[in-house]
Amino acid sequence: MKPNKIKQLWAQGKPVTLGWLSIANSFTAEMMASQGFDAVCIDMQHGETGLSSLMEMLQGVSATDATPVVRVGWNEPAAIMKALDFGASAIIVPLINNAEEARKAVSACRYPPAGDRSSGPVRALQIHGPDYFAKANDDIILMAMIETKEGLVNLEEICATPGVDAIYIGPADLSYALGMAPRADNPDPLHMSTCDRIKEVAHRHGKKVCMHCASAEFAAAAVKRGFDLVMITSDLGSMIAGVKLQINAFNEALKIKS
Image (cartoon, rainbow, N blue to C red; front, side):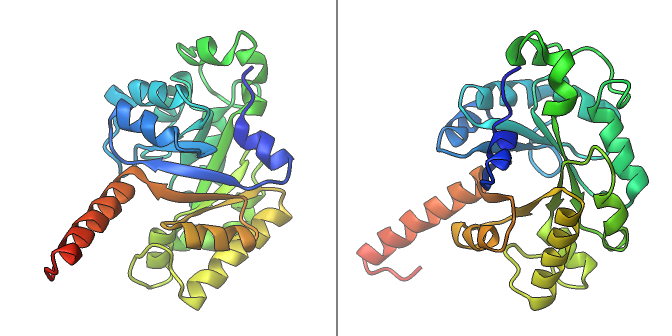
């Protein structure tokens, strides 16, 4: 089976860089994934991608060396299994609130006897290799998002759930859970300390911890704080930032105040 680059890097004690795809276009997905990220996530929760465009998005990412990750829209077995059948090497499941929900996600990701995943890897078998059935349970990565009040209360039991490989922190929803307005790269001391507590508990249970960032600076600082995977930037965020940079440079060159 084709090695999972995320697992390889973690085994070497190295952090993983993640790019984010909000736009449902296979060409921009391929271009984004070609820029040097270790992995790239196709966002089905808040991004444009639906089941009708997921296959071509995965094909775009698979044309590169980046590991394909999918964030599903909900903790729903059929959607998780479909993303895996189409070739995803890692799944991010949002809004995990307790151990029961974590076990549900694990079950959808693993073939029997470890779980209830149905057999039918229509694309995964072809691109990952003929030993896919034998190795998929060990190779597929499941990241559970902890980002709600209930999730924080049940942090220990979620992190202790067998089959959960990593905890993924969603900073905007976590801000809501802490009584704050949502924002990216939140510097608030309570938010920062909560993220560090999640990291410490997850590490104690042998899980990796992932931080969703919005800038290279914040991502680098997260790595220095001990996070194992950092999302650095998205296709949409990069496009907007790049356009604003050029517009502002143009206006400045003409001495026009924007």
